[in-house]
Length: 359
Image: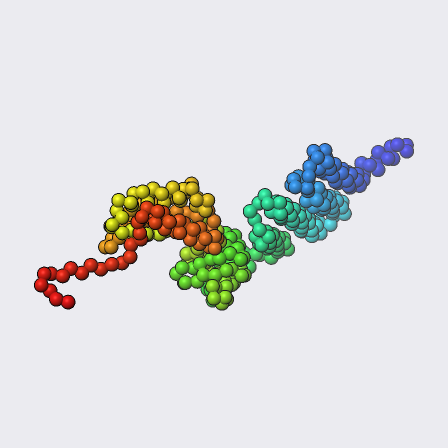
């Protein structure tokens, strides 16, 4: 009789059994997730530089919360159906949806943090070209994006129609953008500077069309500060960089020597030997990059000289070293001309007098 009582009670109280099964499976799923993530992390010998090492931090807590949210909703549904409280079911459904959004947002924020940290570690070891300001920009943009999407989903779950809100926000943004287009153009100009990085702090840049040249002192969201050669600060709105040609002198790989040297017509027989020696000088000079084109040719017969054109690239792009190399080469060219018993030409004027003319 006692055994029949327990069987009858179980069949009468099926909802209690369902509650127990739901709680059991929730605990089982939580333990299973934890075991799997621990196996991935420790059995494979992963290091902190591997994204899989951080899966337990990224996934464990959000998934545990998500499992309990779903379990709580199932428990609430069992109780609602048992005690005929269907009018409260929509409330628990709303809580479930809010819990799912919160869990997924929490997971994405944790993943964003790990993504940011891994990029920064690679940058610190010289394995990545990103710099700290760019990493900060990525983090801020991802945060704003996740918060915006989460807020819209939460408003939708709470029963607010987000279509008028988005429409009104779009119209308001368009009006605001039209009224302050210069501000936004400079802001997005600053955004593009941070993404494309055409120059960095302490680099020398030039805007040829605006006759601006100097060292970059600050890259802001609205404007960039350039200290010119007279040490005057120039405040350049960032939108200008989107429409102007920019030359970054600090990223030059070489500087080019371009000279025209005039020889006398009296020394025309020595010109070929001079050209050969000057060419050999440039190819052997340690300050000249012999892998790049080197030109030494007779350019033209000018009015009072035979012009030699000399072009070559220096190894160093630093102005001081470039000028030292150029000075050394010019002096050696003069020595070559002297050795050949020739001379550099000077502007001259010949006056021819007819017979019988008087001075």
